[in-house]
Structure formats: structure tokens, C-alpha cells
Image (cartoon, rainbow, N blue to C red):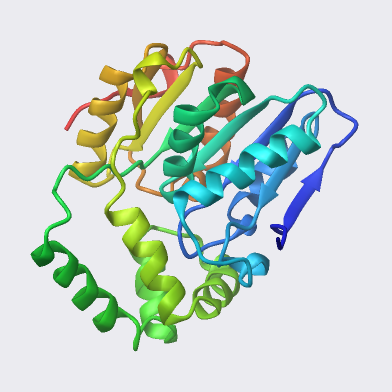
Length: 264
């Protein structure tokens, strides 16, 4: 079995943080975090069919969760890690929490989409149509820049984002988007005793905020907040705030003073 590409630093440090990126991106999404957390053992994988793991296929959330669990068991000092995930990465963390919560110390999940719509033939046809429309234009500079503006991504990340976008072919894109868009809350989360911070950006999509509400109702030890004036990929918009929230959460420090109450 092909292994995921890993960006790894600080192996001498006792505690491990694993960062899971969003769909159509790669480990570069957390460059600002891996620099700020040099006192931790940091692992940032490229997920299957993304970045330098492009040949690890097919992408599924279940398989990705199993792979990350094995990385925790094989690469950490105590078989546990703090997990951080945005969007697709957050969905993978939920899958890990539902199956092997014992490997997770603290978790931060942000921008987590959970669909409650049944996978009817109509929904699947609409998704297929959206993928067919998106595929021919996804690699153009115009569309890449438009995507970056949507997420308020810094302009200096253009080359990284373009490379990640262009690496993903039609079949991989279909698998990734289908897994992401049709993801449902996995069974067993109500039994999880791991502290989970459920985040959205204040400017995030309504369905993301609705999903966050559902999650904090389900997870026993969870809190929900919004990053003020920020959007879906708020770690890229405001890395300093993201780093402060992350460091506070994994050290059991209250974050309510720097975030907004969750609402939609």
C-alpha cells in the first residue's frame, strides 16, 4: 500500500499535532502553523489524491481516517495526537473520533459540512452536473484567482493553490467532492469524550454553521465558536488568531474572549 506524503517537524518534542487540509489543497495550507508550533511534533500529510499523495487512491473519508490513525500509532511518542482539520480535513477527524477516539487528545474542526439530504438520484445527478461544469474551467488562472477571492486567500499562495488544483484530475475530483458533499455525521460521536472545538468563520456558509450546531449537540465535551469577520479558510486569512486559538485549546485555556458565540 502506498504511503501518504508527510511534512514532519519537531520529532524530538513530546506532543504531536496533526493538521489535515481542505479539499483540493495540500500540506502547504498549514505552513504558518508548522512555523508557529516548533515546540510541538507537527505532522502535515497530503491526503489521498492530493498534492504529493496524488497517486494514493481512491480517496475516501473512511480510508483517509484509517491512514491518519495508523500515522498516529506509528509516528507519535504515546499513540495520541491533537488533530486539526478544516472542511474535508474536519470530516476525516469526525470519522476518526467515531472509530478510534482513544488516539485523539484534543481536536479542532472548522468548516465541517454535514449533509442531511438523502442521496437521491436527483441529488447525485445535480452533483455530477456540477462536477462536469467545474472540471473544464478549474485549471484556468481566472477561475483559480476567483476561487482565491471567494476564500479571501493571500495572493502569494497562488502558485501553491494552482499546482494543487491542477494535480487533481476529473475522476479524483468526482471522488473528493462526492465524499465531501454527501458526508453525514458518523455513528458513535455521542460517546466521544475527547475535547472538541467546533469552529466556523463568521462569514462561513449557513449550512456550515447549522452543521456546527448539530455537532455541539452531539459531542459531549465540545464548544462552538466563530472566528470574527473571517471566512471558511480562516487559518489563511488570520494565521495569528488561528494559532492563538489552537495553542489555547490544546492547553485547556478558555478561548471565549477572542471568538464569537456560534450563531446563524
